[in-house]
Length: 186
Image (cartoon, rainbow, N blue to C red; front, side, top):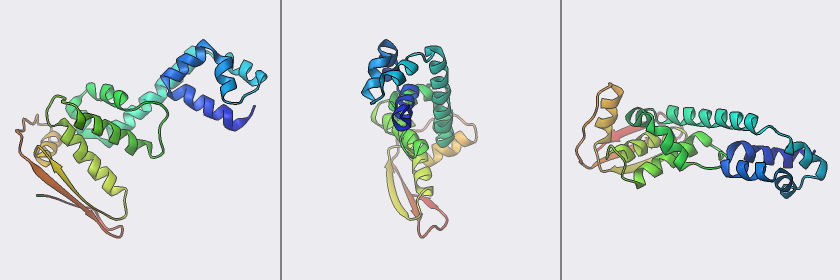
């Protein structure tokens, strides 16, 4: 079997639900679209759909766990709804830098829609700014928020249920030449 083509097909099969459905409706046709020969297509057609679904669920669970670790306060605030928001925000195979990309996708989704609580989009963007800034050697970022997210984050970290009112705030992240990350709220 041509390795590169087989790997590409399997990666899509395990990470893209739409492709998985199409594959199991016509496995040999899908395999041929990846440039695989008749023998390879026939071999792949014998893959057990239940085993593929179990493995795909494991990968999906790992992505959710990684996103929860990347945005822990957002996860705490949303509870069980976090995974629903995440999977609505991401689709298909993971991109390079998956942890940050998945967290950014869910943060964008929460910021765009009116979700409960009202400040959840700001909180996700706030947490993401720390993660993204820490991954860079140099950065100077200024982020505007509709809510006092530093106070909300502190409350959530203490286990308190924040009830923030709309009050604009600004966060500043600074890191130069790989030094320690500096954060200030204005």
